[in-house]
Image 1 (cartoon, rainbow, N blue to C red):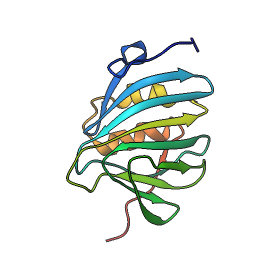
Image 2 (tube, one colour):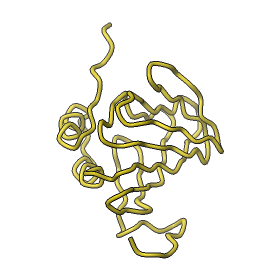
Image 3 (cartoon, helix red, strand yellow):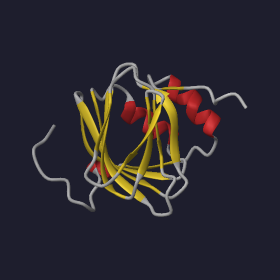
Length: 145
């Protein structure tokens, strides 16, 4: 990983992904970690899923996230750090009226960058779930009605 500063308006390697209504701007990538700035418009979310080989973190910059973590719903506000250990089911939701922003990172990176490249602009959530399973991100089935 090269030393330096990724400015607020810059994306590492110019990589910005649009994933199911959210915008992810790559800020750092190396074998041991990956970080991205995330913009979650109101009503967008990442459904409950598990990373069996990665720890994931969210540092909330703006807005409020509803975090479903290990079966419990919690609120994360600006300045809060959400810790989602590998193997623990979690989901991230913006149920508020304003856009939520945050810095996400994972360790190790594994194939998450490749996953984001593959699901960029894919409009079908079922296809995103299928592709994610090929990259060590396992979405949980929806709850029974």
